[in-house]
Image 1 (tube, rainbow, N blue to C red):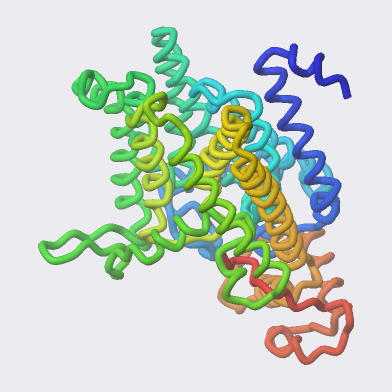
Image 2 (cartoon, rainbow, N blue to C red):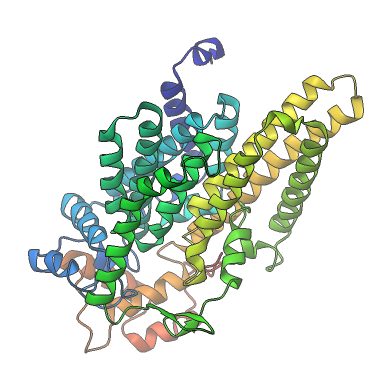
Length: 472
């Protein structure tokens, strides 16, 4: 490989190259295992062509006409599912390729944002290498239904990119299109209610001042806040059966349950762990070793960075904004905590880790006369990369196996869709339905009762994963 030519590439070309290259490495180790994975679980009824009536009704009612999914107001998500369902139909191989391209696009977008916020090429390379082996990366790519989540994040990052362009170039067309993409993102998934807060924090980051442009910043963010408010009102009107916020003097409730910060803390911790949150609870020697190696190497790296890096060169405001962005991105979990909803905080946290590792490289140069410090820095960098990549790989591999058509949990969930209760009319394309029936019958599952007792089946193909598909 000619590193001199790579170094001479433009920033955008370099980012595209690194994003594709690291994805290709992920594919060689993990991605090839899902490329031929057929529709499972929620895919069975969500990835299809929707009627015009269903599409219109999604703008004035529950997004899921089958009333199987969590009630909510996500009309753009239905447009997305209709698009991929109509284009790809039963060709899940090419659909998987399309979803892979979506994920590459997501990483390219985020790397572009990092570049605009001042991260250099080494930091972007370290980030891209680590992120592809995180459990959440494989989680979003192993379940076709979650492609809508990737799509939602792409829209949100486009909105953020355009805001940064607007800050730098002061052309109102960037602000206009940023608002449009924010609308599409929020109407795809309500977890992006935090987007106005992220944009406000980025305004502070670029201006390097907290309150110098307070009123102006509020006016900039106001249209984004209005989108959130409109979505909240429409959700309240059209999806009465959905969970909603209830306020009183003594508490804040969501769907009858008091808001809990326990889920927020779990999401925050999970976002730091490429090997997943529950790896340490289920004793699995490889995961346990990588878990502790990761934690120890991060702690040592942070301590060395604080002690030896001249912090006066770094704006205090940058670190504060970074912390608040992470908290905001984890905030949706105080209502409903989802293991597949940690991608955005993970992206931000791993960009911070990449900065830390690149700083350790600088320390090695500036303090080359201190032999012990140089050795510790070398070990810390190597241990962080190895534990992150290996721990993420093992957990990602286990997650992909948990999402396989021969996974015990997937067999059970598929059975519930196929051998559904009589009063539930779930719309599954006929060809897909027949293929799934043949598959289940090959496992001696012919009805709902068989689905409940399939674990007694002696067929060797059935696999019981160490971690469930929805575990953190």
